[in-house]
Image (tube, rainbow, N blue to C red; front, side, top):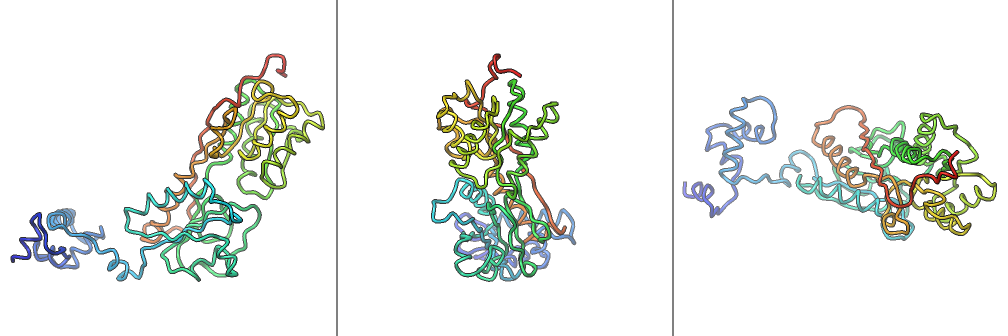
Length: 357
């Protein structure tokens, strides 16, 4: 009896248990357990009384014991893309931040592993459960091209961030690349631009292919002819390929008053090439891009771009994974699409009257 009073007071000497709550309310421990986990089979009033008593007694859920009884580890793995020895990208870190913020209050731990580590051990990203004991995994995929399909079904839930893959029993979180590119191109059109070049990514890149569709759809909706000569598809994404793409357009004497780049990194090279040819941004050529990378607001002029919601994608991935692990999602596959946002800075301006077409 003394122990019970101490548990109810401010100077608690021992942690209250489900049995203590059951005794206090004169119900079974099973009823208390089901009420605390919001399981069916009791009245709303009973559930309310159990939760109120748990708060009064200072009951704290033992995550480790709960995980053991459920056959779970209460841990997840986050697989980051191969960066070839470079510092992790802003993309990786913001997705990670969203993941951590979402899972931290749910009692889960997080293990971060690189794709390169898995590859060095002779495994693909889909083999993560062969090496790590976890309840689920989040895979951030940035590489172009086809991914190797897993040999068997996954033993635990997986959420793939940044792309979708046909025929894989997983959930997906993607940004609305096409809608973002559409809005970016609309921004240029609204400023009077009609000859809008596009620095497109590799054709097999999931994200940049969607951005090209958004660019073309915006032109068509504005009754502007899509000119294939103004579309330069780069073989890979880098500052140098962006520079070469603009060089090619200028060398062929293509006329354009604005450029929409599929990736911010391409815009760096585009800006360098335009300046080398005596063209000012935005006085002569407006420059619009996609991603809102860390350098976008600090280069001169600051880059107008589409912000990719990396943090929100991390949180959405965590929620999808928790729903799978905890049995709240039972459909075969879920794809969550996060909206993007156009960020207007100083690299875009209305087309000069003398250059209107």
